[in-house]
Image 1 (tube, rainbow, N blue to C red):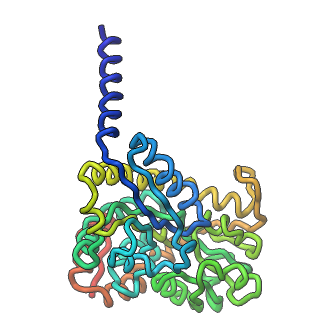
Image 2: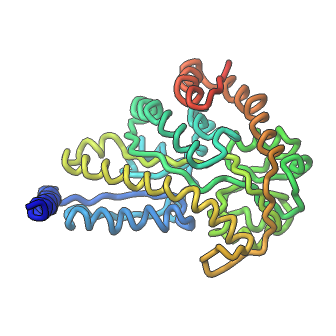
Image 3: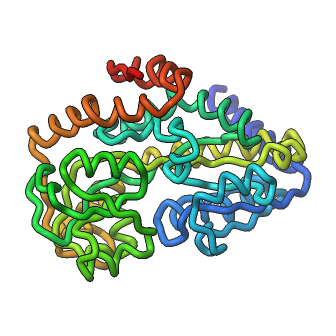
Length: 348
């Protein structure tokens, strides 16, 4: 009897899923994804939009996706183009918009999240504030926020600890990272991701910050000698859609896409810690690396003193500077969510 009931339930659920998919109207979606040479795009975004969505919708929803760089864009334009309706769905890194509004730095301040679990916790805590901010200011609906692997230091120079950043020229990708480097006596250099390899090779910069696996995918191990395995930040990216384009979709399509994007985001978060470790392993040629090419970088394991120093810089330099340039509402939002989670307070 129990077996029959279970089979009946499974069969019912199967037919319900098929019926739900068949009820979806034929819809075609255009998506602008993240950097096309990185694993977040190749291993998650592309399979999700080109395989998962069409298959789960029984072919009712079809999609096309291109990385923003393949469209000749540099990244900071993505939110504006989504806001204007030039793009429908888009993925964009929050740090690209730091100069537009400091609220975009709130979840990813240097030293705020030393591990993926903490990064996810504070991102989810602050997400409702971002949803309101983008909806009201940019007419963009936020569907989710996902991370890259931990942002770490790649150096083409000997580095044994964080203090060795003093006097180094370091490529950074955000104002927050720049302030982090400068707090240690280094000089921040702004370079596009694609310009980093020749810059490291030709000693234009001594070090550069990016995701551990992102750096591997871009072959930074060919032009770097030392990798400091200390997460600085996570460079989260938003998955969003133009509000007007979203509202034109059938409600069933909206519900279907929203639910599945949440799964996509969750899968990327689940992989964040493992990918960070994979980046460490493959850049340094560890036996645990399962990818075909292994780098020969030296892995610099952070000491307790390094971790304490990073936390101290956050509290004494990074957080006060950020709070000074963010609005009172922004700081209050931080304190009531992230601050509450971590036991820290930002003060203007």
